[in-house]
Image (cartoon, rainbow, N blue to C red; front, side, top):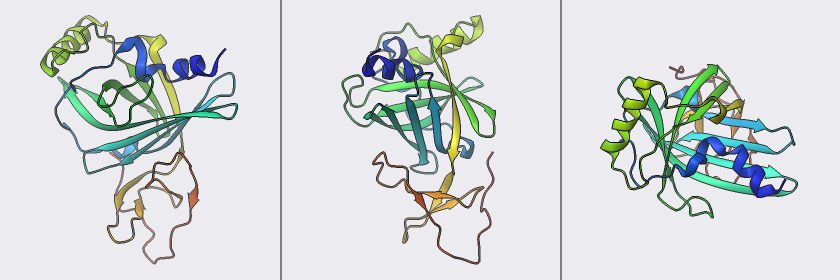
Length: 215
């Protein structure tokens, strides 16, 4: 199987069915950043190909998502800005592509439904939407409500489980650029989104306790 085909299959929950849209579900965040979603996530398929999703806070209500896929010395990256979008009682993620790639144009939107299975395990599900790529946000939300009602919004074959492998950060000091850890002592460099996941030792301080708890 070719590298590109394996990449498409592994990242299918992000790009399935050509579900790329010109408009977001909501024009802005409906909720603040959920610290349970932050961190470095990893998934390895049966062939050994690995994908990492690095999710960091870009603001108090915006996420930055970097997906890096590696296989046999080759790699590909995707970069998104994301926020929570409420539709009825359900919460979805609206992701906006920040870099043009062969598969995802700049500014295109992708929608996912996140489900925390355990503290360090998350399931992402893509949405079954038949609306055209030019559909308005209002039209997209209307279809989601209808499909939630009749139970056709999701498909089990279009879900993907990820395991958290590195720490989560919420607050960033403006002068040092260092994120404050929520739960663990481990720190990771995330500022440049270079695709390199390198451990970074925190400075020695007297205040090493977490400053916040996940929702």
